[in-house]
Amino acid sequence: QKEVEQNSGPLSVPEGAIASLNCTYSDRGSQSFFWYRQYSGKSPELIMFIYSNGDKEDGRFTAQLNKASQYVSLLIRDSQPSDSATYLCAVNRAYSSASKIIFGSGTRLSIRP
Amino acid sequence: DTAVSQTPKYLVTQMGNDKSIKCEQNLGHDTMYWYKQDSKKFLKIMFSYNNKELIINETVPNRFSPKSPDKAHLNLHINSLELGDSAVYFCASSQGGREMNTEAFFGQGTRLTVV
Picture 1 (cartoon, rainbow over the protein chains, first blue to last red):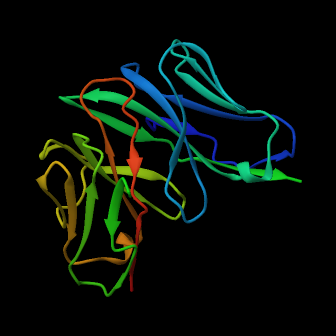
Picture 2 (cartoon, each protein chain N blue to C red; picture 1 turned 45 degrees about the horizontal axis):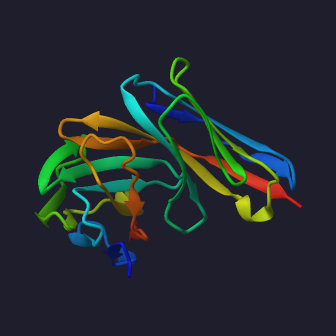
């Protein structure tokens, strides 16, 4: 079982609709959770982080965390063509004196006009 | 100013050669990482250093040898390159420690092609 699992997609969503991205993780010791966006040929960039159960909203983005179910999601409201990218879920586990950030394989999102 | 910079951006080399990738961060972070991203976009952790000390080695072949001369630098040397080493290699840094919100900041990536 992979430590962080995502549906690889592609996920196709019409412009203006809500895109829903899901992620599960295997280690209950995971402390914090991140969503990164990666455009083709570019490096990943952080768009949201969450570490408490519940929802966290930032503009058009909402991250949801359920530690009991080991589940993290990202909702993108009013999807725009510029949201077309690969979305990477990541978890941060305490490891020795440092932290270990593990990524899922990413979900490719395509927003169709 | 670039927060995490790695060089070179592109590297094309023949099988069997030895090559190095350099990484520097000016964020004052304690932890630095090397990740490998394959053609399917899977970003796999290879190594993690905390204050120049190797913390994580994810069963990477010993042809890969990271070196951290100080906490702002983490270089990656690869011996006897193989076709399967072709990928994009990302350097990243984070504040590290056991704090929760230790997001990783990424360099621009090095696209390695072994021919």
